[in-house]
Amino acid sequence: MKGEWCYFSKNFSKNECDNIISLVISNIQPQQPKLGVEGISDSVVRRSEIRFINNNDSKFNFLFDRLWNLAIRANDEFFDFHISRLNFLQFATYDETNNGEYKSHHDVFWLNDDPKYHRKLSCTVQLSDPSTYEGGNFELYNTRQEIDIDNRRSQGTVIFFPSFYMHAVTPVTKGKRYSLVCWFEGPKWR
Image: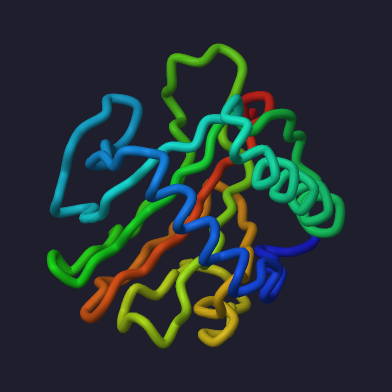
């Protein structure tokens, strides 16, 4: 690895972010998140609403293409992981009505049922205008360099980091925070 994380500031325009939010909300039904391979509901650890965007939904091909191309660039410049697939995106809504948050966690399911793949590279896309909510900060833990708060909150910014890093979303205390997250997978870690 040549870096602990990287980001592409304002990679999606305000208009693109607003259109993605509208497209997802109008086309995909929300659900409550489940944690881990077992799919456990735990509102102490995570309070949000999610929507899954599958890679075979043609309305969202542009998102898969854009994020895959960014992942290749980030991976080439910083991580050098073996990544080979992106199956789905997750659209998350963190709302003030329940202090929406996701406590500290990592994204690798070490003991999964998949014989070939682990999550290798995690990605989060900040879709909300930061002036429309309070709290809801993306936090990345135990890194030597911290991502500047303005860049973490900047609408359209895309952040990449190794899936085994601990991270969180702090409680939203006012408004709603929308984000996209995805995981680029590759052969199991050894």
